[in-house]
Image (cartoon, rainbow, N blue to C red; front, side):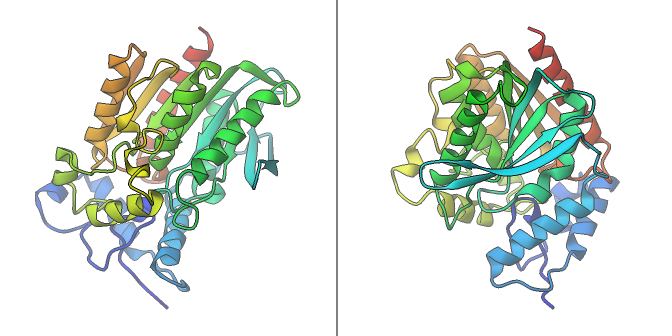
Length: 334
C-alpha cells in the first residue's frame, strides 16, 4: 500500500510534505468545515499507483467521489464518441428530469490542472447543474497532458462544441440556447473557446479559472503552500501542458494574454477566497469587462479551490450551484 499526503489533491498533484494543515497564518483563517475537508483529504490512500502522476489522478478520483454530494437522478445519461480528424472524443450527455425537447444545452469542461479528471470526478456536479438549469449537458472527456499537451485538449473541446451546435436540432436542443461552463483548468479551455466561438454561445460560467501560467500574483504568494494547491506542482502542471516557448505566450493557452473578448458571451466568474487562483481570476474578469463584456464576479468567502467538489461538507457548494443556475436561466430569457 502506498500512502501519500496530498497538498494539491483537487488538481491532481502530490507532495511529500503535508502543508494543508501547517499552523501558519493562512490555515488559522480557515473555518472548521474547511479544516474538516482538509483532514479528510489527508486520510485518502492510494493502494496501487504506477508513478506519482498515476497516484495523484487516482487520489483526485477518490476525493471527488468521497466529498461530492449524493448524485441526483437525471432522465438519461448517454456515452458515445464524437469523431474528429485524428481522434474519437469520448463524451457523456446528460438529460435533466422533466425536459424532453427544445432544451438549452451546456458544454461542461472539467478541471484537473490539464492532467486529471474525467466522468466520475464531475458526475455529481454535472447531474446537479443539469437538473437545476433544465439544460442538457455535454461533458467532454478531453485528452490530458502530459501525454497530450496543448492544444490536444482544447481541440477536443472545440470539436465537441461545434458538433453539439451543428447537431442541436437532432438532439432536441435549441441552438440559440447553448452555453459553456469550465472549472479550474476547464476554465482555461472554456475561455479560449468562448473567445473563438462565443458568437454561437449564449452564456459562459468560469469556476475558479486557471488564467495565468506565471503564478506570480499576490494570492499565489499568500497561498503558495496551500491549502489545497501548492505553487511547486502548479508550475509543473503548466510545464506539462505547455511544451514550447510559443505555447507559453499563446493567448489560446494562457487566457490572461487574451486581448480581444468581443465574441465572449455574458459571463459569470466564481472565485474562492483562500485560492491561489483568486487574483488571476479577478484579473481575467476585469480584462473581459474592459472589453465591454457583461461579467459578474462572485467571491465565495472562506472557500478554497475546488469547493464545488465538497458538497457533502460545505453548504457553499449548493449556494454556488444555485447562483450558476439562476445566472444561466436569466441569460436564456434574454
